[in-house]
Amino acid sequence: MTQKDAHDVPLLQEDKQLDKDYIGCSVGIMAYNEEANISRTIHAVLEQHGPSMRIEEIVVVASGCTDRTVPIVTEIARQEPRVHLCIQEKREGKASAINLFLKQAASQVVVLIGADVIPEVSALESLCAPFQNPKTGIVGGRPIPVNDPTTFMGHAVHLLWRLHDRLARTQPKLGEVIAFKNVISGIPADSAVDEISIQALICQLGYLAIYEPACIVYNKGPLTIQDFLKQRRRIYAGHLRVREQQNYEASTMKIGPILSQLIIFRDFTIRTPTQAMWTLGVVLLEAWARIQGYYDYRMKREHHIWQMVDSTKDLEAEKQKVRRICNAVSVIIFRFIVEGSDNHIANPEGADREATEAARKLLPSLRSRLRKEDKLSISGPGILTAVIRAEQHGAELVSQRIQQIVQTSPVRIGIRNRAVQVVVAYSSLTFALKPKTGSITVSSPLVEQAIMAARTAGNGGVL
Image (cartoon, rainbow, N blue to C red; front, side, top):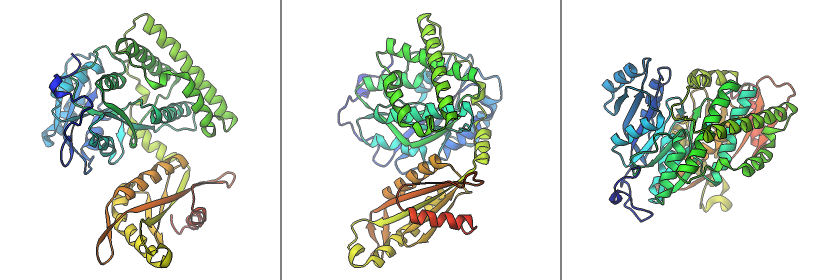
């Protein structure tokens, strides 16, 4: 019932490449009273682009909506032929809505993304790239919450998603946005955790599950303890049900790896007395939610028709608010090196000239991947400087993204217009706009260049 015809499922064989030039995607958005978010989400998906993927259709399944979700999607569909609306008159749960979507999805790869998340530029490109390997069956992205980490609930949400990120890198646990081969026709209708149910089915067909941290989507976690417990309780009960029904266990069910990561993340979990107290509070809340979830599982209480967690909505407003209250500026220094050049030792000036030319050619593409308020410029031979309003964690994400783009982009330089491979080293420096102690945080190599750039920024030269 949950897998498609046998001839459609090439189990771990060298199946044909999905497409010679690109991967076609059907994107599913499940919506229940999402008038505040649905237009933004659809347009964000339509703007996704990349050389290895193409959005062929977007199917919005509106389940029992009583707000303006349906009229909003209808108007967008009139202007954009790739957008289709499927109306489910009665709300029967997200799993039921997903099953309706899977019946309509026509592309070789299907993507599920929540109506209340914001994908980064080229997030779906990163999500779909692993399907060039025919053994890949399902890929998940990296959710980053927009909650304020300087509050208890913000700390709780950031801590959970950081733990999720670290655990998923070793044993994939996929959520918030996933892409998978169109080889299943449905999931159990009573599933309260659709992503793990899909992951179980795909992996049991013999395909690989991949976690792709370069695919970044922004979400919003609960703002109240009551909403936090409601959400975590449902998830744990759902995981127990999947373990029983589908014989598949999520990696986050194991306590040992979670405790190990709490220690590894001590700079975030216990660096200050406040953080230590908040982390203890999160552990106690999670334990209580799991006890409640276990009780629901034993009592066979259904969770597949969710109670809406109201405080996780209005994501765009929260994202802008967090952006405004961010009290830190990061300076990132990138050093470009043209790989394999014979000039590095005999003619260092020539090597710098080649690196600078490569940086100039890549600069427009890199600027298009940053926010409008972020600054990116060439500041020396083979040196690129970025000044962004972000804390150290955000700066590290931007650094990794730019490094990946540069090192995977073809570049031609010189009179002969020869193709070269560019490698990138980077360092980042983060400091408060209104520092209380005057302290500065520096990471990675190239410290001297970072300090010089920070001094320039402080004197108004860069900012």
